[in-house]
Image (cartoon, rainbow, N blue to C red):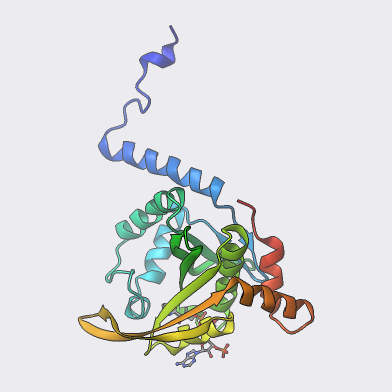
Amino acid sequence: MSTLAKEPIFGELRGCEWMWRWRAFQLLSVTTIQPAFETERLRLRPFVLGDAPVLQRLAGRREIADTTIAIPHPYSLKMAEEWICEQACWVIGGKSVVFAVERKADVQLVGAVGLRNIDREHAQAEMGFWVGVEWWGNGDASEAARGALCFGFGQLGLNRIYAHHMVRNPASGRVLERIGMRREGLLRQRVRKWGVFEDVVLLAILRADWVGDAAAERHGSAPAAVRAGEDASPRL
Ligand SMILES: CC(C)(COP(=O)(O)OP(=O)(O)OC[C@H]1O[C@@H](n2cnc3c(N)ncnc32)[C@H](O)[C@@H]1OP(=O)(O)O)[C@@H](O)C(=O)NCCC(=O)NCCS
């Protein structure tokens, strides 16, 4: 009989350590099924546990929680670690996919972009993103969002990608317009933030719009990041 068979798989590991080993295994699985890809200036890749301190520092700013729904405030290191670990289940379950947004030039993690509520039956998903406050206004969100469109239409085969932003968050609206989304409506008091009901704008882009934009870009009128993401996007 093999000596291996006599050893418990996780040896001396107790409660918490066992859980972390299991989570590390899940994250390894995610990096296998969710490959990284590049746009012109950015690298979009799965989050890894080592990102947790930077994630906590960036997403922990009140300005980030203020115009998002899913990011709690305050945001502890433990929350960041647990969120990263949860990614594995969401990706494996096909429910959502989130990319860490990293600048290629200095390998700096600057934010996140993702597709959630992935609906296979109707081939659609919801886009969300944030960028660390210190890097606002550099075009990172727009470029990362274009990359996520390429991934959603290219690799996931989606037909419609939509997004919401609070009316008082015009920067997000601008990013969504820049990537080709069109306004579909105003959802009155759709969310409650900090105890106050807020109106939300709904925008969306169809695959046909995106293909049309890409065709226009090949003739010189669309942004280069679309071309970069399209060429470099991974095959799942
Ligand atoms: C929204 C957010 C992601 C934008 O990130 P960013 O990297 O600064 O975005 P970009 O630089 O790609 O583009 C921002 C655009 O908004 C415009 N903008 C910024 N503030 C604005 C304002 N108050 N009103 C109108 N437009 C504004 C910028 O001018 C730019 O457009 P332009 O390039 O055409 O001039 C960032 O502010 C953020 O993370 N906010 C908190 C989280 C959040 O709200 N996420 C979105 C949830 S729907």
